[in-house]
Length: 154
Length: 131
Image 1: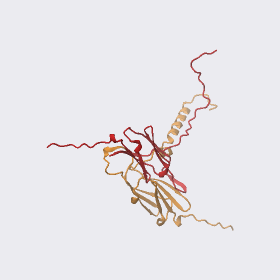
Image 2: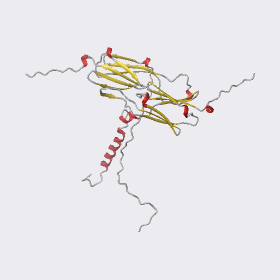
Image 3: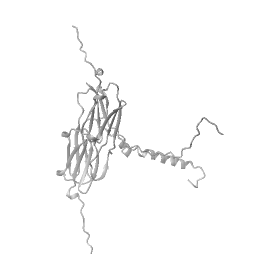
Image 4: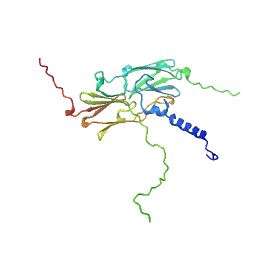
């Protein structure tokens, strides 16, 4: 810095604090790098992970859920609440615990509910399970769609 | 004249940077367990088509690669996960018969069967109990 000729310890400390904060920024829980480092297994927390997007007519929800038994997937919508339930198939019951070298993938039943940004038409919801991703297409309710209001010029 | 056997230190012309060009990859979760014929590796590869997964063995290292694709349209409202190429490697023991490795893909789950060479497979020995 130009103009500073004397050594100011407080300025140094402030710089250090900023440096440390920046170093940890990316590693916050839920931060971008933490999220990309590994994929979570099945544990006592939000499962499956969801990505939500929307366009003019629909809300799209994609769930990261590999290895589900497609027959167990239940999707229901009430007003603006979405409920996804299902079961991740265990490999087989025959494998003894001592036969495992690694056991990172989880298995079992799960339920997740989420509030959608708008009310959707529950009768027209489409669900597609492909390659371990569950894509839901939820058409927005007529009431929730934006309306164009003509402006009258006097 | 300057004589020296020690090479002159050359200053680096290019400043050191912290830029990374390496692509970000995800480590898939796996289960590895013993089966009667050998080993099985089960890996979660969500969003990966059957044709976009590659399983290879080179120098006794098993490499799993996969590129996931998402078909989600629209403008993003919330993101809880990101899909990046999957990559994970495991070292194999000599007991694995590398010619007979086979893999299958179902609902985003990759299963690799690693049979052991015949001599390494456990033999059942009948125990006679003298009564």
